[in-house]
Length: 329
Image (cartoon, rainbow, N blue to C red):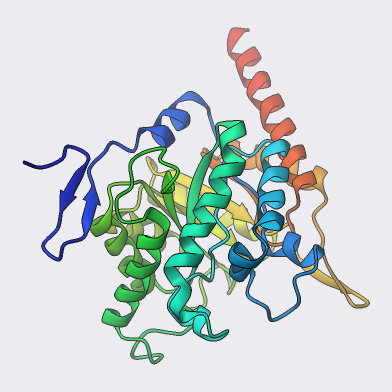
């Protein structure tokens, strides 16, 4: 007799069939949800050395990762991303950690869950690109990519996720993709292993296309067709470029749940320090513009701090109140 919450697949893997209602319920209650900001930036500010993998901190210094999560939650984030952007076998192998994929990803979920519990926030499992191009442009075959994503996703879900379980994320978050092939493979593996919502973002950092030449409109169409629950962008170039890209995605997919998680402006070197041009006030204004474009999931990427998120939260709440007041007139 089959467990109602689990379905055994042909290879013995257990797939969740529980309803992913926490994310959908929260999304139905608000015009937009606020995501967190940069993880790497915050960890570097707390002593992570350039070249060291942020994901290793999940094992050797989980407290510092939990502090970053908690600061974003206190600033108003509804969803936090696990510290697993580079938590796949290919990237971890660069640091001799390829045999710790499951351990690193599973630990990241536990850390994020501890922080989210106090705030009743959601946890999204961050899945970044593999770091090498797929055949024919690089050495990674489709089968190798599929297996790498599969290994990481099983770590993020512990293979048997139940909604709001301490052992699993609430949704899967594929981000900073430049290749549609790679993004599609990741989506397909997510859908094979789980029924959790799958959010996907690409980085349009090359003349408003991805590095692999994918346009925002083409991305929206293809990602949704592959099974994504929400689509959008992260990282990228200027705020204006990101706004134009998200508008193209909206035009191509009028009914889609859109995501925008841009950098805090353009990075600039000031001596030995890398800074970002967008102040919290500017990011707050941009968050309101995104909400007016119908973006439902709003956050920040590189350079975005808890101060930025706090300002964005305040602005979005003010924007909501203004819209409600206008409707009453």
